[in-house]
Length: 130
Image (cartoon, rainbow, N blue to C red; front, side, top):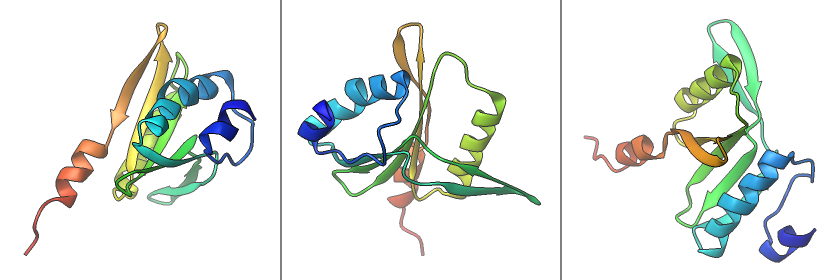
């Protein structure tokens, strides 16, 4: 259990690959220690996606509850991102705008934030509608 027991971050199971474990240790855990994250779950939910008559599913790597009560879904990728993964992620961002969607990629020995819907959504949520 190691770091997970100390962090008190709940995991659906311990089936993380090396990239996901690296992301947890280098990105999520420091945010938890800083008080930015209340909870994080690994491989917990599936989101149904539809495009016309086509239906598919996206199972984000991490579901994160931030300290301000916002739910984020984090998708973690290695050096190569398939077209299918990119399309599914874009569909999820459009079909579930109430959540924050982040796609991180480990490439060239560093983390790169590829997609981030949080800025868009928080601006939309702060608007006053008649």
